[in-house]
Amino acid sequence: MLQIEAVYDKVPVGLCYLNRDGIFVTVNDQLSRMLGVSSDHAAGRSVEDVVPDHAALLRASLVAALKEKPIPDHKMQRGTETLMISAAPVTNDLGEVAGISVAYTNITNMTQISERLAEIEQRTTYALESAGQWIWDMNIATNRVWRSPQYRTLLGLDPASPAAENVAWDIVHPDDKARTIEAFEDVVSGR
Image (tube, rainbow, N blue to C red; front, side, top):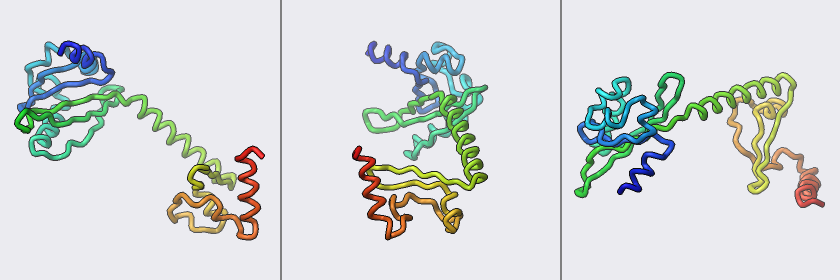
């Protein structure tokens, strides 16, 4: 049991266990750091006493678990950090919900990267639209291709229609298709 507790305290995710009354039973070291509370301070105390700013969220997760309903993940801003809070029911030997296990994952970097990628994608789209260009990306293994929305406009197609993945050679003129595929296969095979 001591080895399990040692691992529990070393994972890079904040973990805790709340009993069915919303009382902290365990809090690992990472969660103590994330929330700025000591394990000793949290153990045996209610969620309202320890984390009043998001006690309602934990209570709602506990209620969902007790009603055997799915517990959705939640994002929470805590200062400059974004945390993903995930919970799962914990059952006793009789199969009854005894509480919930809660994981707090710091997703600040992932959120920032996602926002940055969205900005880059938007700038790239604007640049391609302004230049009258389009891009495509081919998955050689599946012979499927993704084309940017600009290709629909440039080919006189409805730009509002869904831009689904298409067969790679579906826009090549039938008279040119065999030569195009052969040239492509020569390139891919190294000929």
